[in-house]
Image (cartoon, rainbow, N blue to C red; front, side):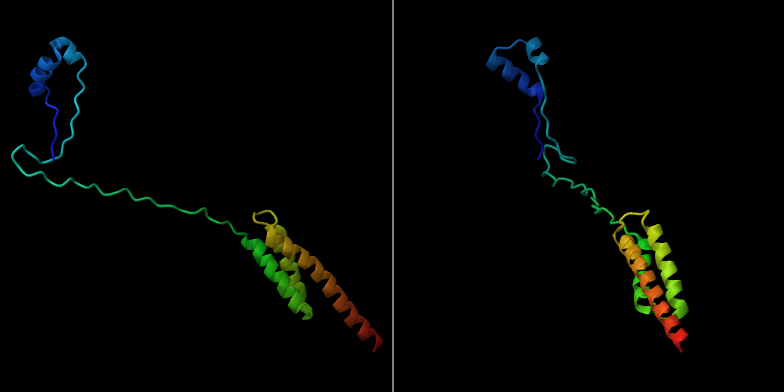
Amino acid sequence: MRFFLNFNVMKPVIRAVCGLSNKLFIANYHPIQQTMENTTPHSQPQPPYHQPQPTVIVQSPRESSNGIGTAGFVLSLLTFALGWVPVLGWILWILGLIFSAIGLAKKPRGLAIAGLIISLIDVIFITLLFGMIAAALALV
């Protein structure tokens, strides 16, 4: 639908009704127009052209992870489970300790701290285990 506040048509009517002079009327004139595309006074109004809505992409904050700290934690747990295997226990312990220590430099630090604590408990466990084995072999 097309609406016009046509100044040329309405000016004499408003001037006659209100008794305004031409200069005063023009100085205070603020046109209000609402138009639609592709319409003429004698044609049917066209439906409004709908522009596509803008696409809004909402991204949640990316949760950070500490892969090195997690690896240190897992290796520390494996050391706790497989520490009795002579060479494998020491290799897993060293790797778990190193990865957990490196993981302390990155955030989040939770698994890195847990891996470091478990690695320190593991070294006590492995030392006691191999000390008992050495003592048993010395008695024989």
